[in-house]
Amino acid sequence: MSLEDADGYKNQGNIELKLNNYEKAVELYTKAIEINPTPIYYSNRAQANIKLENYGLAILDANESIKLDKNYLKAYYRRSVANFAILEYKNALNDIKLVLKIHKNDKHAILLEKEILKFINQIKFENAISIDENLSIINNLDFNSMIIEKNYTGELLDIQVENLELSKNDNKIGGKLIDKNNNQIVRINNLDLNFINKMIESFKKNENLPKKYVLAIISCANQIFLNESSLVEIEIDESKGEELITVVGDTHGQFYDVLNLFKLFGDCNKKHKYLFNGDFVDRGSWSCEVAILLYCLKILYPTQIFINRGNHETNDMNKVYGFEDECKSKYNFKIFQCFSESFNNLPYATLIGKNYLVMHGGLFSDDDITIEDIRKIPKNSFKQPPKEGIQMELLWTDPQVNEGRSPSKRGIGMQFGPDITKRFVEKNNLKAIIRSHEVRMNGYEIEHDGKLITVFSAPNYCDVQGNLGAVVNINLNDSKEYQLNFETFEAVEHPNIPPMAYTKNNMGY
Image (tube, rainbow, N blue to C red; front, side, top):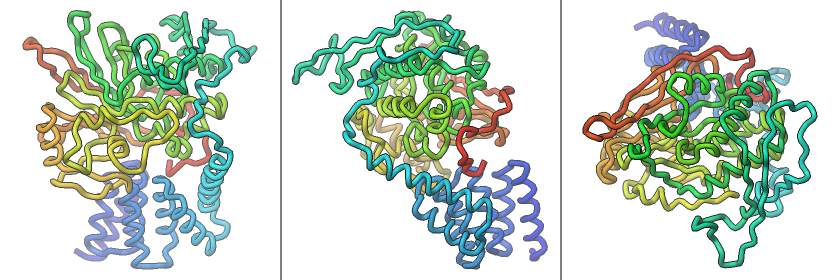
Protein backbone atom coordinates (compact mmCIF):
# COMPACT_ATOMS: atom_id res chain seq x y z
CA MET A 1 0.00 0.00 0.00
CA SER A 2 1.06 3.60 -0.65
CA LEU A 3 1.62 6.63 1.54
CA GLU A 4 -1.62 8.01 0.09
CA ASP A 5 -3.45 4.96 1.48
CA ALA A 6 -1.95 5.62 4.92
CA ASP A 7 -3.06 9.25 4.83
CA GLY A 8 -6.50 8.12 3.71
CA TYR A 9 -6.80 5.85 6.76
CA LYS A 10 -5.68 8.74 8.96
CA ASN A 11 -8.31 11.06 7.47
CA GLN A 12 -11.02 8.42 7.94
CA GLY A 13 -9.83 7.98 11.52
CA ASN A 14 -10.19 11.70 12.11
CA ILE A 15 -13.78 11.57 10.90
CA GLU A 16 -14.60 8.63 13.20
CA LEU A 17 -12.94 10.44 16.11
CA LYS A 18 -15.18 13.47 15.58
CA LEU A 19 -18.20 11.14 15.42
CA ASN A 20 -17.16 9.64 18.82
CA ASN A 21 -16.51 6.26 17.18
CA TYR A 22 -13.28 5.85 19.10
CA GLU A 23 -12.67 2.14 18.60
CA LYS A 24 -13.12 2.55 14.84
CA ALA A 25 -10.74 5.52 14.93
CA VAL A 26 -8.09 3.41 16.69
CA GLU A 27 -8.52 0.71 14.05
CA LEU A 28 -8.03 3.18 11.19
CA TYR A 29 -5.03 4.92 12.77
CA THR A 30 -3.48 1.49 13.32
CA LYS A 31 -3.81 0.72 9.62
CA ALA A 32 -2.14 4.02 8.80
CA ILE A 33 0.72 3.26 11.22
CA GLU A 34 1.24 -0.19 9.71
CA ILE A 35 1.82 1.42 6.31
CA ASN A 36 3.79 4.46 7.41
CA PRO A 37 4.53 5.06 11.12
CA THR A 38 4.59 8.83 11.61
CA PRO A 39 4.42 11.00 14.75
CA ILE A 40 1.04 12.37 13.63
CA TYR A 41 -0.53 8.92 13.25
CA TYR A 42 0.73 7.77 16.66
CA SER A 43 -0.40 11.00 18.32
CA ASN A 44 -3.86 10.76 16.76
CA ARG A 45 -4.19 7.18 17.98
CA ALA A 46 -3.12 8.40 21.43
CA GLN A 47 -6.04 10.84 21.38
CA ALA A 48 -8.50 8.08 20.45
CA ASN A 49 -7.13 5.92 23.25
CA ILE A 50 -7.56 8.80 25.71
CA LYS A 51 -11.22 8.96 24.70
CA LEU A 52 -11.48 5.22 25.35
CA GLU A 53 -9.78 5.74 28.74
CA ASN A 54 -6.95 3.45 27.60
CA TYR A 55 -4.42 5.80 29.13
CA GLY A 56 -1.58 3.29 29.22
CA LEU A 57 -1.90 2.73 25.49
CA ALA A 58 -2.14 6.48 24.91
CA ILE A 59 1.16 6.98 26.74
CA LEU A 60 2.82 4.28 24.64
CA ASP A 61 1.55 5.93 21.44
CA ALA A 62 2.75 9.34 22.58
CA ASN A 63 6.15 7.86 23.40
CA GLU A 64 6.42 6.44 19.87
CA SER A 65 5.39 9.78 18.39
CA ILE A 66 8.10 11.58 20.40
CA LYS A 67 10.72 9.01 19.38
CA LEU A 68 9.98 9.82 15.75
CA ASP A 69 9.92 13.58 16.31
CA LYS A 70 11.07 15.00 19.64
CA ASN A 71 9.64 18.40 18.64
CA TYR A 72 6.07 17.19 18.01
CA LEU A 73 4.29 19.03 20.82
CA LYS A 74 0.87 17.43 20.43
CA ALA A 75 2.39 14.15 21.56
CA TYR A 76 3.71 15.77 24.75
CA TYR A 77 0.31 17.36 25.40
CA ARG A 78 -1.52 14.05 24.96
CA ARG A 79 1.01 12.19 27.10
CA SER A 80 0.42 14.83 29.77
CA VAL A 81 -3.35 14.33 29.59
CA ALA A 82 -2.95 10.53 29.84
CA ASN A 83 -0.52 10.73 32.75
CA PHE A 84 -2.78 13.15 34.63
CA ALA A 85 -5.71 10.80 34.06
CA ILE A 86 -3.87 8.00 35.88
CA LEU A 87 -2.67 10.46 38.55
CA GLU A 88 0.97 10.48 37.46
CA TYR A 89 0.77 14.22 37.92
CA LYS A 90 4.52 14.92 38.13
CA ASN A 91 5.09 13.34 34.71
CA ALA A 92 2.04 15.21 33.42
CA LEU A 93 3.39 18.52 34.71
CA ASN A 94 6.82 17.99 33.12
CA ASP A 95 5.26 17.42 29.68
CA ILE A 96 2.86 20.35 29.81
CA LYS A 97 5.62 22.72 30.92
CA LEU A 98 7.63 21.64 27.89
CA VAL A 99 4.66 22.47 25.64
CA LEU A 100 4.27 25.90 27.25
CA LYS A 101 7.93 26.72 26.71
CA ILE A 102 7.24 26.74 22.98
CA HIS A 103 3.58 27.85 22.96
CA LYS A 104 3.18 30.15 25.95
CA ASN A 105 -0.34 31.19 25.02
CA ASP A 106 -1.83 27.80 24.18
CA LYS A 107 -5.22 27.87 25.97
CA HIS A 108 -5.53 24.09 26.34
CA ALA A 109 -2.03 23.73 27.75
CA ILE A 110 -2.52 26.66 30.15
CA LEU A 111 -5.75 25.12 31.45
CA LEU A 112 -4.19 21.67 31.85
CA GLU A 113 -1.18 23.07 33.72
CA LYS A 114 -3.55 24.98 36.02
CA GLU A 115 -5.51 21.81 36.79
CA ILE A 116 -2.38 19.74 37.44
CA LEU A 117 -0.96 22.39 39.77
CA LYS A 118 -4.30 22.68 41.55
CA PHE A 119 -4.28 18.93 42.12
CA ILE A 120 -0.67 18.93 43.41
CA ASN A 121 -1.27 21.90 45.72
CA GLN A 122 -4.46 20.38 47.08
CA ILE A 123 -2.62 17.19 47.99
CA LYS A 124 0.16 19.20 49.67
CA PHE A 125 -2.41 21.25 51.62
CA GLU A 126 -4.34 18.21 52.80
CA ASN A 127 -1.13 16.51 53.90
CA ALA A 128 -0.08 19.65 55.77
CA ILE A 129 -3.31 20.01 57.75
CA SER A 130 -3.73 16.29 58.43
CA ILE A 131 -3.62 15.86 62.19
CA ASP A 132 -4.95 12.39 62.91
CA GLU A 133 -5.51 10.01 59.99
CA ASN A 134 -7.52 7.75 62.32
CA LEU A 135 -10.03 10.42 63.26
CA SER A 136 -13.54 9.62 62.03
CA ILE A 137 -15.31 12.64 60.59
CA ILE A 138 -18.62 10.79 60.54
CA ASN A 139 -18.33 9.80 64.20
CA ASN A 140 -17.71 13.40 65.25
CA LEU A 141 -20.62 15.04 63.47
CA ASP A 142 -22.63 17.25 65.82
CA PHE A 143 -26.18 16.85 64.56
CA ASN A 144 -27.66 18.88 67.43
CA SER A 145 -25.91 22.02 66.19
CA MET A 146 -27.02 21.58 62.58
CA ILE A 147 -29.92 23.59 61.18
CA ILE A 148 -32.26 22.89 58.27
CA GLU A 149 -31.89 25.40 55.42
CA LYS A 150 -34.80 27.85 55.30
CA ASN A 151 -35.54 27.22 51.63
CA TYR A 152 -36.14 23.49 52.20
CA THR A 153 -39.84 22.61 51.84
CA GLY A 154 -39.62 18.81 51.64
CA GLU A 155 -40.34 16.03 54.09
CA LEU A 156 -38.76 16.32 57.55
CA LEU A 157 -36.60 13.52 58.91
CA ASP A 158 -36.60 12.33 62.51
CA ILE A 159 -32.89 11.93 63.33
CA GLN A 160 -31.75 10.42 66.62
CA VAL A 161 -28.15 10.16 67.78
CA GLU A 162 -26.83 7.77 70.43
CA ASN A 163 -23.27 7.88 71.71
CA LEU A 164 -22.16 4.50 73.00
CA GLU A 165 -19.84 4.11 75.94
CA LEU A 166 -17.33 1.40 75.11
CA SER A 167 -14.74 -0.19 77.33
CA LYS A 168 -11.25 -0.77 75.94
CA ASN A 169 -12.03 -4.42 75.25
CA ASP A 170 -15.56 -3.93 73.96
CA ASN A 171 -15.83 -4.30 70.19
CA LYS A 172 -19.38 -5.56 69.76
CA ILE A 173 -22.83 -4.07 69.95
CA GLY A 174 -25.74 -6.47 69.85
CA GLY A 175 -23.38 -9.23 68.80
CA LYS A 176 -22.09 -7.27 65.79
CA LEU A 177 -18.51 -6.11 65.33
CA ILE A 178 -18.08 -2.36 65.34
CA ASP A 179 -15.32 0.12 64.67
CA LYS A 180 -14.36 1.75 67.99
CA ASN A 181 -13.87 5.04 66.14
CA ASN A 182 -17.51 4.87 65.03
CA ASN A 183 -19.45 4.57 68.27
CA GLN A 184 -21.94 7.31 67.43
CA ILE A 185 -25.07 5.55 66.24
CA VAL A 186 -27.38 7.63 64.02
CA ARG A 187 -30.94 6.55 63.36
CA ILE A 188 -33.47 8.03 60.94
CA ASN A 189 -36.83 6.83 62.18
CA ASN A 190 -39.04 7.91 59.28
CA LEU A 191 -36.92 7.36 56.16
CA ASP A 192 -39.40 5.50 53.96
CA LEU A 193 -40.45 5.19 50.31
CA ASN A 194 -42.58 8.30 50.60
CA PHE A 195 -39.54 10.35 51.61
CA ILE A 196 -37.39 8.79 48.87
CA ASN A 197 -39.98 9.45 46.16
CA LYS A 198 -40.39 13.08 47.19
CA MET A 199 -36.61 13.43 47.40
CA ILE A 200 -36.31 12.18 43.82
CA GLU A 201 -38.86 14.73 42.65
CA SER A 202 -36.94 17.52 44.40
CA PHE A 203 -33.70 16.35 42.75
CA LYS A 204 -35.42 16.60 39.37
CA LYS A 205 -36.15 20.25 40.20
CA ASN A 206 -32.45 20.83 40.85
CA GLU A 207 -33.06 21.11 44.60
CA ASN A 208 -30.72 19.77 47.26
CA LEU A 209 -31.45 18.04 50.53
CA PRO A 210 -30.49 19.85 53.73
CA LYS A 211 -26.84 19.15 54.59
CA LYS A 212 -27.92 17.70 57.94
CA TYR A 213 -30.04 15.09 56.16
CA VAL A 214 -27.28 14.13 53.74
CA LEU A 215 -24.84 13.68 56.63
CA ALA A 216 -27.37 11.58 58.55
CA ILE A 217 -27.99 9.39 55.49
CA ILE A 218 -24.25 8.85 54.99
CA SER A 219 -23.83 8.06 58.71
CA CYS A 220 -26.64 5.50 58.74
CA ALA A 221 -25.44 3.80 55.56
CA ASN A 222 -21.86 3.77 56.82
CA GLN A 223 -22.94 1.90 59.95
CA ILE A 224 -24.39 -0.82 57.73
CA PHE A 225 -21.25 -1.01 55.57
CA LEU A 226 -19.11 -1.36 58.72
CA ASN A 227 -21.02 -4.50 59.62
CA GLU A 228 -20.56 -6.05 56.18
CA SER A 229 -17.53 -8.14 55.27
CA SER A 230 -15.17 -7.13 52.47
CA LEU A 231 -16.78 -10.12 50.74
CA VAL A 232 -20.57 -10.11 51.02
CA GLU A 233 -22.49 -13.32 50.35
CA ILE A 234 -26.07 -13.16 49.08
CA GLU A 235 -28.58 -15.63 47.64
CA ILE A 236 -32.18 -15.91 46.52
CA ASP A 237 -34.12 -17.21 49.52
CA GLU A 238 -37.45 -18.44 48.17
CA SER A 239 -38.69 -19.12 51.71
CA LYS A 240 -38.68 -15.34 52.19
CA GLY A 241 -40.40 -14.71 48.86
CA GLU A 242 -37.22 -13.58 47.10
CA GLU A 243 -37.29 -14.01 43.33
CA LEU A 244 -34.58 -11.97 41.61
CA ILE A 245 -31.12 -10.41 41.95
CA THR A 246 -30.19 -7.63 39.52
CA VAL A 247 -26.50 -6.85 39.04
CA VAL A 248 -25.84 -3.28 37.88
CA GLY A 249 -22.50 -2.13 36.47
CA ASP A 250 -21.03 1.39 36.35
CA THR A 251 -23.64 4.16 36.54
CA HIS A 252 -21.24 7.13 36.91
CA GLY A 253 -23.61 9.77 38.22
CA GLN A 254 -26.16 9.27 35.42
CA PHE A 255 -29.10 9.79 37.77
CA TYR A 256 -31.85 9.78 35.17
CA ASP A 257 -30.59 6.49 33.73
CA VAL A 258 -30.54 5.00 37.24
CA LEU A 259 -34.17 6.03 37.72
CA ASN A 260 -35.00 4.48 34.35
CA LEU A 261 -33.18 1.31 35.35
CA PHE A 262 -35.49 0.84 38.35
CA LYS A 263 -38.49 1.67 36.16
CA LEU A 264 -37.53 -0.97 33.58
CA PHE A 265 -36.39 -3.79 35.83
CA GLY A 266 -38.35 -3.28 39.03
CA ASP A 267 -37.98 -1.57 42.38
CA CYS A 268 -35.77 -2.85 45.14
CA ASN A 269 -38.05 -4.64 47.59
CA LYS A 270 -38.42 -7.84 49.61
CA LYS A 271 -38.67 -9.91 46.42
CA HIS A 272 -35.98 -8.15 44.41
CA LYS A 273 -32.35 -7.65 45.44
CA TYR A 274 -29.98 -5.24 43.71
CA LEU A 275 -26.19 -5.25 43.56
CA PHE A 276 -24.51 -2.06 42.30
CA ASN A 277 -21.01 -3.04 41.21
CA GLY A 278 -19.08 0.17 41.85
CA ASP A 279 -18.37 3.43 40.01
CA PHE A 280 -21.68 5.04 40.89
CA VAL A 281 -19.98 8.45 41.19
CA ASP A 282 -17.71 10.62 38.99
CA ARG A 283 -18.07 11.71 35.35
CA GLY A 284 -21.83 12.25 35.36
CA SER A 285 -23.10 15.49 36.93
CA TRP A 286 -25.64 13.87 39.27
CA SER A 287 -23.22 11.76 41.30
CA CYS A 288 -24.51 13.25 44.57
CA GLU A 289 -28.07 12.32 43.68
CA VAL A 290 -27.11 8.76 42.70
CA ALA A 291 -25.06 8.22 45.87
CA ILE A 292 -27.75 9.65 48.15
CA LEU A 293 -30.45 7.54 46.48
CA LEU A 294 -28.44 4.32 46.79
CA TYR A 295 -27.60 5.08 50.42
CA CYS A 296 -31.27 5.77 51.23
CA LEU A 297 -32.24 2.44 49.67
CA LYS A 298 -29.47 0.73 51.65
CA ILE A 299 -30.90 2.15 54.88
CA LEU A 300 -34.43 1.14 53.97
CA TYR A 301 -33.51 -2.30 52.57
CA PRO A 302 -30.17 -3.24 54.20
CA THR A 303 -30.44 -6.91 53.18
CA GLN A 304 -31.88 -6.25 49.71
CA ILE A 305 -29.51 -3.73 48.16
CA PHE A 306 -25.74 -4.11 48.07
CA ILE A 307 -22.98 -1.80 46.82
CA ASN A 308 -19.48 -2.92 45.82
CA ARG A 309 -16.63 -0.44 45.76
CA GLY A 310 -15.28 0.65 42.38
CA ASN A 311 -12.04 2.39 41.46
CA HIS A 312 -13.97 5.69 41.35
CA GLU A 313 -15.00 5.38 45.00
CA THR A 314 -11.56 6.70 45.94
CA ASN A 315 -10.21 10.14 46.79
CA ASP A 316 -7.70 10.55 44.00
CA MET A 317 -10.22 9.67 41.30
CA ASN A 318 -12.87 11.91 42.88
CA LYS A 319 -10.48 14.87 42.79
CA VAL A 320 -9.88 14.47 39.06
CA TYR A 321 -13.22 13.17 37.75
CA GLY A 322 -15.68 15.48 39.41
CA PHE A 323 -17.33 14.01 42.52
CA GLU A 324 -15.37 16.08 45.04
CA ASP A 325 -16.09 19.32 43.17
CA GLU A 326 -19.74 18.36 42.76
CA CYS A 327 -20.08 17.76 46.52
CA LYS A 328 -18.45 21.12 47.28
CA SER A 329 -20.67 22.91 44.76
CA LYS A 330 -23.98 21.37 45.84
CA TYR A 331 -23.21 20.94 49.56
CA ASN A 332 -19.76 21.34 51.18
CA PHE A 333 -16.38 19.66 51.56
CA LYS A 334 -17.39 17.92 54.78
CA ILE A 335 -20.05 15.97 52.90
CA PHE A 336 -17.41 14.80 50.44
CA GLN A 337 -15.17 13.77 53.35
CA CYS A 338 -17.99 11.75 54.88
CA PHE A 339 -18.77 10.05 51.57
CA SER A 340 -15.06 9.27 51.27
CA GLU A 341 -14.98 7.68 54.72
CA SER A 342 -18.04 5.58 53.87
CA PHE A 343 -16.45 4.45 50.58
CA ASN A 344 -13.59 2.98 52.63
CA ASN A 345 -16.11 0.67 54.29
CA LEU A 346 -17.80 -0.61 51.11
CA PRO A 347 -17.33 -4.31 50.26
CA TYR A 348 -14.83 -5.19 47.55
CA ALA A 349 -16.79 -8.15 46.17
CA THR A 350 -20.06 -10.06 46.45
CA LEU A 351 -20.58 -13.80 46.09
CA ILE A 352 -23.99 -14.71 44.66
CA GLY A 353 -25.34 -18.14 45.57
CA LYS A 354 -21.75 -19.44 45.89
CA ASN A 355 -21.73 -19.52 42.06
CA TYR A 356 -20.88 -16.03 40.81
CA LEU A 357 -18.21 -13.74 42.19
CA VAL A 358 -18.89 -10.08 41.46
CA MET A 359 -16.18 -7.41 41.72
CA HIS A 360 -15.68 -4.10 39.95
CA GLY A 361 -12.35 -4.73 38.20
CA GLY A 362 -11.11 -8.26 37.87
CA LEU A 363 -8.65 -10.98 38.82
CA PHE A 364 -5.18 -11.06 40.23
CA SER A 365 -1.48 -11.13 39.43
CA ASP A 366 -1.06 -14.08 41.83
CA ASP A 367 -2.71 -17.46 41.10
CA ASP A 368 -2.65 -18.33 44.80
CA ILE A 369 -5.27 -15.70 45.72
CA THR A 370 -8.68 -17.20 46.60
CA ILE A 371 -12.09 -16.00 47.69
CA GLU A 372 -10.95 -16.36 51.29
CA ASP A 373 -8.27 -13.73 50.71
CA ILE A 374 -10.98 -11.27 49.62
CA ARG A 375 -12.98 -12.06 52.75
CA LYS A 376 -9.92 -11.27 54.90
CA ILE A 377 -9.35 -7.77 53.47
CA PRO A 378 -9.53 -5.51 56.55
CA LYS A 379 -11.96 -2.62 56.68
CA ASN A 380 -10.28 0.71 57.37
CA SER A 381 -12.35 3.88 57.45
CA PHE A 382 -9.32 6.13 57.17
CA LYS A 383 -7.02 4.70 54.51
CA GLN A 384 -7.36 4.71 50.75
CA PRO A 385 -6.77 1.46 48.84
CA PRO A 386 -3.08 0.68 48.24
CA LYS A 387 -1.57 1.18 44.79
CA GLU A 388 -0.70 -2.50 44.48
CA GLY A 389 -1.95 -5.86 45.69
CA ILE A 390 -5.34 -7.52 45.96
CA GLN A 391 -7.41 -4.40 46.72
CA MET A 392 -6.01 -2.45 43.78
CA GLU A 393 -6.52 -5.41 41.44
CA LEU A 394 -10.14 -5.94 42.54
CA LEU A 395 -10.80 -2.33 41.54
CA TRP A 396 -8.62 -1.94 38.44
CA THR A 397 -7.75 -5.05 36.39
CA ASP A 398 -9.23 -5.91 32.98
CA PRO A 399 -9.62 -9.05 30.87
CA GLN A 400 -7.73 -9.66 27.63
CA VAL A 401 -8.20 -12.06 24.71
CA ASN A 402 -4.71 -13.58 24.90
CA GLU A 403 -3.73 -16.05 27.59
CA GLY A 404 -1.52 -15.08 30.50
CA ARG A 405 -1.07 -11.62 31.94
CA SER A 406 0.14 -8.33 30.45
CA PRO A 407 0.53 -4.66 31.44
CA SER A 408 -2.70 -2.70 31.64
CA LYS A 409 -3.93 -0.64 28.72
CA ARG A 410 -5.02 1.84 31.41
CA GLY A 411 -1.55 2.30 32.86
CA ILE A 412 -2.75 0.97 36.24
CA GLY A 413 -3.02 -2.68 37.25
CA MET A 414 -2.75 -5.45 34.67
CA GLN A 415 -4.75 -7.55 32.21
CA PHE A 416 -5.57 -11.24 32.59
CA GLY A 417 -6.38 -13.88 30.00
CA PRO A 418 -8.93 -16.71 29.76
CA ASP A 419 -6.50 -19.21 31.31
CA ILE A 420 -6.25 -17.03 34.45
CA THR A 421 -10.03 -16.86 34.69
CA LYS A 422 -10.40 -20.61 34.14
CA ARG A 423 -7.95 -21.47 36.92
CA PHE A 424 -9.56 -19.07 39.40
CA VAL A 425 -13.10 -20.24 38.67
CA GLU A 426 -12.18 -23.90 38.99
CA LYS A 427 -10.07 -23.41 42.12
CA ASN A 428 -12.91 -21.56 43.87
CA ASN A 429 -15.77 -23.78 42.60
CA LEU A 430 -17.47 -20.92 40.73
CA LYS A 431 -19.52 -20.83 37.56
CA ALA A 432 -18.27 -17.42 36.45
CA ILE A 433 -16.92 -13.99 37.34
CA ILE A 434 -19.12 -10.90 36.86
CA ARG A 435 -17.30 -7.56 36.65
CA SER A 436 -17.80 -4.05 35.25
CA HIS A 437 -15.22 -1.25 34.84
CA GLU A 438 -15.29 -1.03 31.01
CA VAL A 439 -17.69 0.33 28.44
CA ARG A 440 -19.29 -2.35 26.29
CA MET A 441 -21.19 -1.03 23.27
CA ASN A 442 -23.95 -3.60 23.78
CA GLY A 443 -23.96 -3.00 27.54
CA TYR A 444 -22.46 -6.38 28.35
CA GLU A 445 -20.10 -9.01 26.98
CA ILE A 446 -19.62 -12.71 27.75
CA GLU A 447 -15.91 -13.45 27.61
CA HIS A 448 -13.29 -16.10 28.44
CA ASP A 449 -15.32 -19.11 27.26
CA GLY A 450 -18.36 -17.97 29.21
CA LYS A 451 -16.51 -17.78 32.52
CA LEU A 452 -16.29 -13.99 32.64
CA ILE A 453 -19.04 -11.42 32.14
CA THR A 454 -18.63 -7.65 31.84
CA VAL A 455 -21.70 -5.51 32.56
CA PHE A 456 -21.79 -1.72 32.12
CA SER A 457 -24.91 0.26 33.09
CA ALA A 458 -24.21 3.85 32.00
CA PRO A 459 -25.84 4.12 28.53
CA ASN A 460 -24.37 6.72 26.18
CA TYR A 461 -21.52 7.08 28.65
CA CYS A 462 -20.56 10.71 29.23
CA ASP A 463 -23.16 11.71 26.60
CA VAL A 464 -20.81 10.71 23.76
CA GLN A 465 -20.15 6.98 23.59
CA GLY A 466 -23.48 5.87 22.12
CA ASN A 467 -23.39 2.55 24.01
CA LEU A 468 -26.31 0.65 25.46
CA GLY A 469 -26.53 0.02 29.19
CA ALA A 470 -27.16 -3.46 30.57
CA VAL A 471 -27.97 -5.36 33.75
CA VAL A 472 -27.70 -9.03 34.68
CA ASN A 473 -30.92 -10.46 36.11
CA ILE A 474 -30.35 -13.64 38.12
CA ASN A 475 -33.14 -15.99 39.16
CA LEU A 476 -33.69 -19.66 39.98
CA ASN A 477 -34.84 -22.05 37.26
CA ASP A 478 -37.10 -25.06 37.77
CA SER A 479 -34.10 -27.08 38.94
CA LYS A 480 -33.32 -24.41 41.57
CA GLU A 481 -30.13 -23.45 39.78
CA TYR A 482 -29.08 -19.86 39.26
CA GLN A 483 -29.59 -18.63 35.70
CA LEU A 484 -28.47 -15.37 34.12
CA ASN A 485 -30.55 -13.14 31.85
CA PHE A 486 -29.07 -10.09 30.16
CA GLU A 487 -31.22 -6.98 29.65
CA THR A 488 -30.14 -3.90 27.72
CA PHE A 489 -31.52 -0.36 27.72
CA GLU A 490 -30.93 2.98 26.05
CA ALA A 491 -30.11 6.33 27.63
CA VAL A 492 -32.99 8.61 28.54
CA GLU A 493 -33.18 12.37 28.26
CA HIS A 494 -31.77 14.46 31.06
CA PRO A 495 -31.45 18.20 31.77
CA ASN A 496 -28.95 19.97 29.56
CA ILE A 497 -26.02 19.71 31.96
CA PRO A 498 -22.82 18.16 30.54
CA PRO A 499 -20.66 15.56 32.30
CA MET A 500 -18.38 16.93 35.01
CA ALA A 501 -20.20 20.24 34.98
CA TYR A 502 -19.01 21.14 38.49
CA THR A 503 -15.29 20.91 37.76
CA LYS A 504 -13.12 22.83 35.29
CA ASN A 505 -11.10 19.70 34.58
CA ASN A 506 -12.85 17.82 31.75
CA MET A 507 -10.15 15.17 31.20
CA GLY A 508 -10.72 14.93 27.48
CA TYR A 509 -14.53 15.32 27.51
